[in-house]
Amino acid sequence: MALSRQYPPPLPLAQPWRRAIATSIDFLVIWLTSVVGITAGAAIQWGQITVFAVVWWLLRVAMVNRNKGQSPGHWLMNVRLLDGRDRTPDLLSLSKRELVIGSCALLALVGVESYGFNFALIILLMPLAVDCSLAWIDEEHRTLHDRVGGTSVYRCRRGFYLDRKIIEIVTKLRKDMR
Image 1 (cartoon, one colour):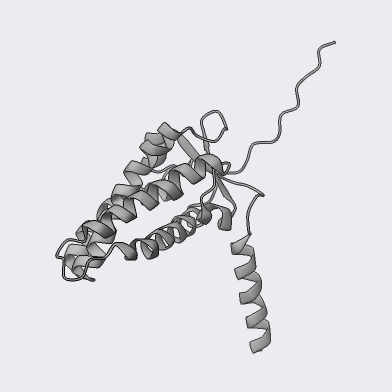
Image 2: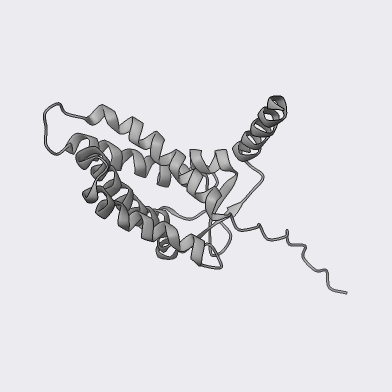
């Protein structure tokens, strides 16, 4: 009689809106941190770009590697990054993945900081929009940076449940307004 090994049920894939909120949270934290690198009167903010790139790598690569596949945004939204073997990705896979999305996010930052909200900003936002929009189209909800890094984003139980807390607050506010 052979004993069969019990495997846990597979984790559900994270919805694109959940991933977008998690990445937006990370972007905002990194952008606010990068403000310390601004040089007054400089045309190109090399200090801010450098701080942004370093903090992006620390938060989205080093922390994800050490924190079971979760960045702060992922933790708040209860999503986890796993590789093809359902493990936390190694530093090389994470670095390749974040090089793609980080470059797109950096272009978006340069557009917002330098050009404001005009046509140039739209051009600089296009790479980020194209990369992230693939999650809405693909049946596995994988983006270009997921494919480069060989990763997928799954829902998990570990986190803050920010989405549920916001829904509870909105429901309570609606009920109180009646």
